[in-house]
Image (tube, rainbow, N blue to C red):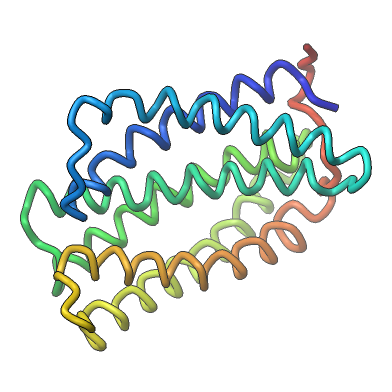
Length: 211
């Protein structure tokens, strides 16, 4: 069931996504001018519309609404991961080597912590308070492996393979980060769904909240 809180959360996700998109596009030398300040607003409405569409279509495909929430959280994690990475690159001018590995570790760690709370309380609506320590431990195990996979793939693409086809160092850093996200996505989804939140995987609403 679609709640008012779902629309509000989708607006928040779209807004944050839009802001973090600005430094990402900046490192791709894409000039946005004054339009940059409209990105958060545009993505806020887009996120809310996409979630509403998923809820409507879930009448015929039940899991679609929960998947849309997971995808929205994934988009937010992407924005936080890439946004922080590109902000650090812009500040320091470092887009390769050990500095890049450190930046990527920081950015993906922040994104993963964000992922835990959004997926626990929104996507999978985990209302349980008992066993919280065990759940968080399981989450951290899945997460640590995910961070290793994420950073490892990014390091492979950026520092070992290196830029191809005349692509610049900064855009290639983002290509490496994107490759790591794609690989890690499958690991995280399977780990969260079947290990961490396996007992509360049916879609529902936030605890004690209604429209």
